[in-house]
Length: 133
Image (cartoon, rainbow, N blue to C red; front, side, top):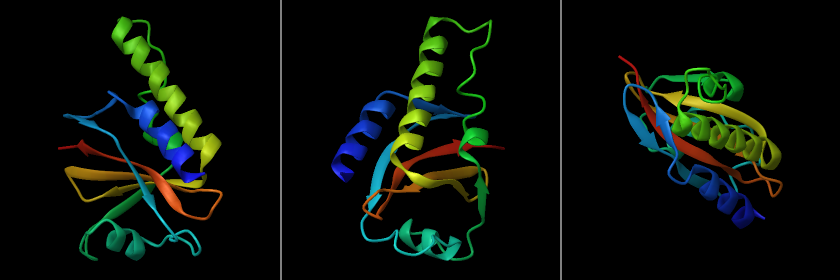
């Protein structure tokens, strides 16, 4: 089941870049046997190899992708295609993972983890980076 989910996420994120002050690709991850208990900030920092003092902000999935999933009149063809890709990505995340949260770790150079539970109670999702000065 996890292989199917990760394959869908890999296809959905292929050549897709997260826009911020820079552009970063997405990476798919699975943390096996980590979804039995609620994901705390401390546990997330440990899983991602960050120090326990690192700041974390949690945002809703729709809020995180708010600027990526809406068509604008001024979009060119490439931008229109990217909007469709982001819409598909959000749909795949929602269709395949439960209890999805977006975690923003750090400041300025922010590591983003979009984490949800798989039906087999593992944690899975995608990560990327955003730059915000």
